[in-house]
Length: 176
Image 1: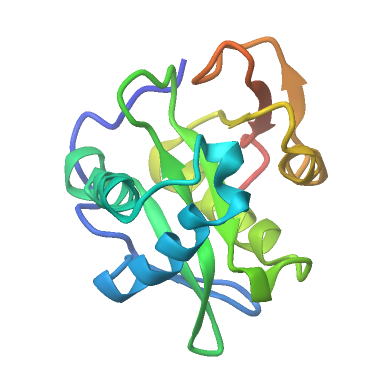
Image 2: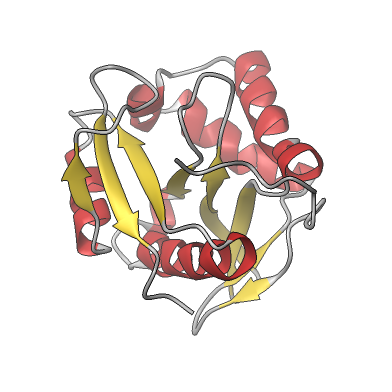
């Protein structure tokens, strides 16, 4: 069982870099991208589409995880352009912290979510010593399920956020 950290070492997101990406603390301007996502048909896998007010509550609560839990979402930039989000989420009711992602329409199909997810998994291992992290994915979201598997995850019978979730577990022990 993954536990939340006993103390908050990261009240704000550190900056992580990959070959193409900068992962950073979300800022207010990033909400416009989340709102576009949550208003679209793509949000169906997250329980949406959502109106602006509900999208704001979700965004603000996720960003608010940083000072409360020491982890949360990272905004991803490529060449200074916002391309999506990746991070560790644990709203009330989630059995364990979850690795999740989304990319903008323009960033689809470029491997951005995978690159960001790998960086977050390595950071979680190095920062918290976690042995694993899970994805909780709606069974209809075949693209996210495929990505979870491409990242080396294995479908498990562990509980998800919803009883119908496909839970994909990532072994972090081999990461730096």
